[in-house]
Image 1 (tube, rainbow, N blue to C red):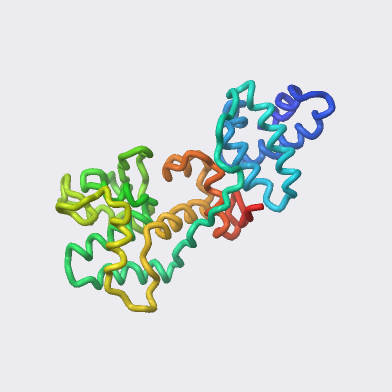
Image 2: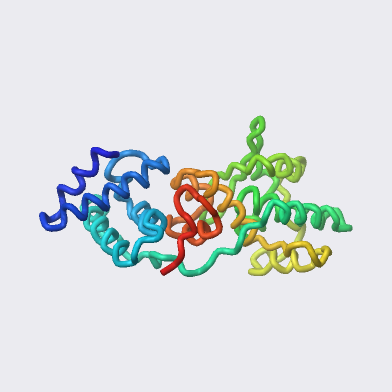
Length: 273
């Protein structure tokens, strides 16, 4: 993308050309490192710009980040039009901490320790499709056995709803995901049978009823999803791919998860300012 730097900066007013070139250069390196395709329409995508301002400028003064954002937005308008109403650039809400490897083992043990077979399967579904596929509560509640497919070692979850997508299940959970879905057909995987699945706290209330050692971590789907996202951040999953498999619309939303990832390829514990 190096050749795009002078091309972009050349569109800026003369007095701003040097600063704009610096901003575009940083954005270009940020995008290239994350596998974003070459081309102005990709480089100057508003979500890519936001991700760069939130994550790529970690540690820089807020005034510097504001100047870079203004310069890059000015270049993006002729390519994509006005940005319209956007989310807060620097997400303030903290994401829940991901589970540690030991904590994940404890959760699997908690699921296995439930006395009722149906409850064991539902508890394991929270762990497997939360940490292994990053599902939201409504997505887990709607999940059916037929939504889980297997091709060789690759297991995928076909998520329905507003953020419909196909999610490759993390390798460590793929076998268990396929096992939970095997032979269930069109049956719900989480708490099968008659139930009010529109109830907001359907998953949360179930998790509260699980018998567990007091020392074990509390099972919450939000922490499971955070674990999934943080694992991908730590592994350096390209930005566009990560947005696609998580169902997240705006790249800046990932910054709140990156706070938990030491040495994340696209962020180092970005702090909201």
